Amino acid sequence: MAEQRHRVVVVGAGFGGLFATKALRNAPVDVTLINGTTYHLFQPLLYQMATGILSEGEIAPPIREILKRQENVRVLLGTVTEVDPEQRTVTAVAPGTSYTVEYDSLIVAAGASQSYFGNNQFAEHAPGMKSIDDALELRGRIFGAFELAELATDPATIERLLTFVVVGAGPTGVEMAGQIAELAHRHLPGQYDRIDPRKARIILIDALPTVLSTFGDRLSTTALRQLHLLGVEVELETKVVDVDETGIEVETRDGLRRIESLTKIWAAGVAAPALSRQLAEATGAKTDRAGRLQVNPDCTVPGHPEIFAVGDMMALDNLPGVAQVAIQSGKHAAGQIKRRLAGEEAGQPFKYFDKGSLATIARFHAVASVGRFHFAGLAGWLLWLVVHLLYLVGFKNRVTAVMHWFVSFIGRGRSERVATFQQVFARRALQQYRDHLP
Ligand SMILES: Cc1cc2nc3c(=O)[nH]c(=O)nc-3n(C[C@H](O)[C@H](O)[C@H](O)COP(=O)(O)OP(=O)(O)OC[C@H]3O[C@@H](n4cnc5c(N)ncnc54)[C@H](O)[C@@H]3O)c2cc1C
Image (tube, rainbow, N blue to C red):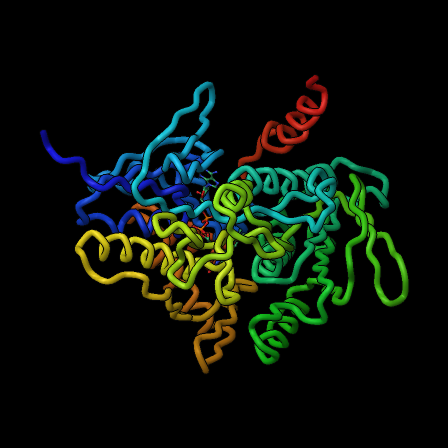
């Protein structure tokens, strides 16, 4: 009878899980990759999907297609709800079914979810930016607000509809605010009869005193100037204290203030996924304040050398939740498994190579911090373009993304504007349905 090969289960097909799986391509292992969706999501471009530049297919290629030439991998749809470290099994659920898979080595790369800092009720009126569903809902809300403003007659209602508030001035918030401003000032003018989209207010709010605080003072100041040039109102040292259907309440040094706005976008805060808590309870591992698993320097879970936690859900040396940490830690976990199977010494600490940070503010303008080098303006934007093309998965996706960028950045088109009522209202309808369940 043929000897059973080493079984590796990878949970999550984001950057961490996908790159770990690919790194095991020629290893003498059988890999089972379990993911909650059928696609690999390129989260850094979600904001372009929400603002009509890219389509969902371009940033979310099917996992099966990406891995179709890798013979030692089996792809399964499922949300892993439980890891049993004693039995060495994971249990997953998919619509109408559940199943259990055994492993010899486990790589958990379940990413992160949105945090509302204990105010989950804000989510109903201020969607986050973590998933395709979020971006489609936001697309519907943003373009829908302009449509409703065209129908409205009361000036206060029009103003509320044309006020967009983005909470969180990190890269996602800055990119989102910049794109809504470009939409209002450059793409939509001339398409409506009664309203002038240029009158839209785009407000970017953060509790901190700077935008893009992790990029350093110089780039932060450049980004702030560029946002002002785009017409974005930046309100710093401003804390959101309440969000409801028609507005947002903020606290500043001068006290409480209300901003009337139908469209609010939450781009602040991350929390570890539910699986992180379950894994911590099952293994006795500790978690940090965001719920991320505290791992050993080699990315293994303490007391369980066969379990690795990588990417956004691991807490190690204060590493940031960025794509490169996930990619490199996923590859490191795969490398450790290969070393063990080859009888080589393992347990080497994960060493992160910081390739830098990028954030676009508008077309032809981005800030980039690469080691000691700081770029802004066109140079930063060209670097952004090259990096995103390199990491977008799939040749076809790269070609169509470039075409869409050409249409949006050189021309004035926003071709991916399809939005349905289902996209906008399904989440709330589902929530209400769940609330009424016994
Ligand atoms: C809007 C946005 C913009 C960003 N911009 C940048 C940027 O410009 N540059 C940068 O470096 N980083 C950026 N990031 C961060 C970057 O995307 C993450 O650091 C990276 O995706 C983390 O990879 P990961 O594999 O840990 O998790 P993810 O990529 O989130 O992947 C997790 C995967 O696990 C799956 N999953 C989750 N739970 C389960 C479960 N229980 N069972 C099965 N599957 C599960 C999910 O479906 C998903 O496919 C951005 C993130 C967001 C949200």
